[in-house]
Length: 429
Image (cartoon, rainbow, N blue to C red):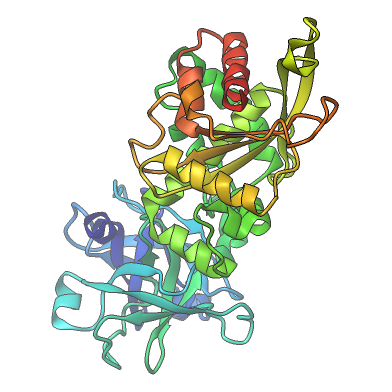
């Protein structure tokens, strides 16, 4: 992370001010507004902007002022010469969590700072929801903080574990560094034509490609079909409505802690949201309902003897509304996980309709084993002393891998639909 971070940063000189900036394209640079105040506040003085400590270039390069935002303290400049930097950073309007680990790089007024710059490591310890008074909205604890040694870090990028810039440093407080989030400056930047990634909770977009890799000829079709789920729900919608139920075993943590835990584990984050996008796309293939992620439904058919004990040989086809629950588990054996979950649900008498529980994990061996009739978890279709008119209620268990295999082994989307529906029906037999 640090190598690219270092290559994308530069030192900025403007009048009496010295600070840090970082490339967001091969020529555009973001910095803190006050680094350019000698120019912005005194345009008639015609102050020059110069940068150095550049990747693959020795000496200073002149830059031109583009624009700034007084409300957020951000400023934009662009390189005037032919110099182009092939290392630049990605901006993300991320929800920043307390205790989130960060890295930064800047050019303080120290021996190393003047010559080659210095790295910083630390953690976010506070975000400020009402930042109109403070200007900044992020407070950062830096490892081995020493008061008075951070002059020159203004404008430095703050990068999280996902290797995206989530804020930039503005000034030094008594015991910590203050920063402004990219989320706060996103509208200004987008109005300037600068790309800002959405927070990972606001869209499934970044998980779309990885979700359907290795699907062969159906990859493009699945990507296309995923566009509708992308417009109907977001990871944030799922977290808000499901909260603790998104995991099994259930996590009853407050939502901010749940979000922080997910963000701290990139593998978990990717597997969780790619898995949801996969499932919602499969439901779209089956023409199911998923407007409410707590009430995902598809229709399945079940051919059964209309009377018990084979008193009547006639068969009829019953169309069932199948409720689908989706969970994430860290356990290796999803059948053990599934049985435990279903047993708990039945004991608490939560099952009131035909239900299939789909489990997922970022463990690579999770759910590889194919489901057979021997793996039926529970059949409660014949309650004790009930008559034949009582509707059958069944519960089944699948892994996301079971469904994924049915897609990969299908020749076209029509056969994929048949195979998916069959897999759900088999889980209920």
